[in-house]
View 1 (tube, rainbow, N blue to C red):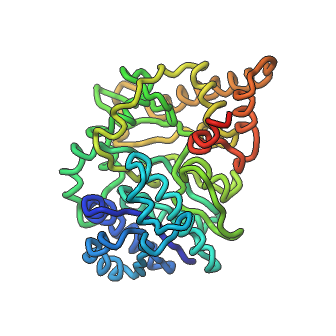
View 2: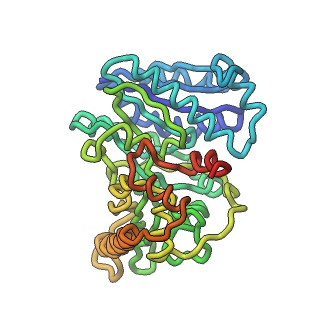
View 3: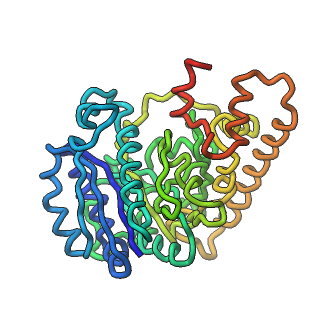
Length: 386
């Protein structure tokens, strides 16, 4: 077994954040060290030349865990005839991270595919893992899964950071991190809870709180676009035009070969974002059967249904003998709503007379192969032409 891990990050503040929070959690006993006991591991970091010295303290920690650290510099990569570092300097700062992530992740996958028996792990620079999460990925691969995908809990950086500096020596317990998420959940994620005062304009997930005795015990979520944590590369590398959440997992493996994590007790990872991230977005409509059916037909592919129909439990604690909702009860309610939404989708598809050309284009995107899916990134490129 062999793994090659990807992360792309540059700039002193972001590299420090990566080392202090993300990499620290990944080096807890049940994560990278446990993985390296049973497999060869390369940790490939994409960055720029000025940022490279900020990783100096991280390299010995990786090597002590039996992991090979490898750096790829943007100055040594080309994009449309120029050095990637030059392209970054001239790019719109609001979209540059996603574009750099796409280009570097595809380079990483090509490199990983060159070595037989290698799986690519695709991490973000602010992913914080509960102890045992990364080892769980290896367990699933050894059980025959060709891809592992999961939903992260988005933390508000300003509120969560003080607690995250106090990681126990044996790493974060999953339920401790979920409780931290309940206490310091990012506004973007709060805006996707049913009944939220201000709802997200882009409902990529729907969340239902689980409460008992006046306490929030966790929540149940349904999500269209989980993050691809691991993909096998038996058929080689492939290119994609979106962010990796939209299509990489589905293009890498058949539905039955994907482990979609449905409990934080099995695998939990969090994303640490500044509280002001996307704070200027317009408000969305509260979710209804009609609004969600429209979202599905305009923004998803039929294969995303396998993810959306699966309730995922984020567990801070189980209540015993306390009056209130249980995770199973809430999952039943949430699953019933999602089922009704897809019934509405099917009804819309059965009555396509008079649909305008643009709507028909999205219906074909929804029903067609994932390779032809029109993600928001692809749509932005097509918009002028349409």
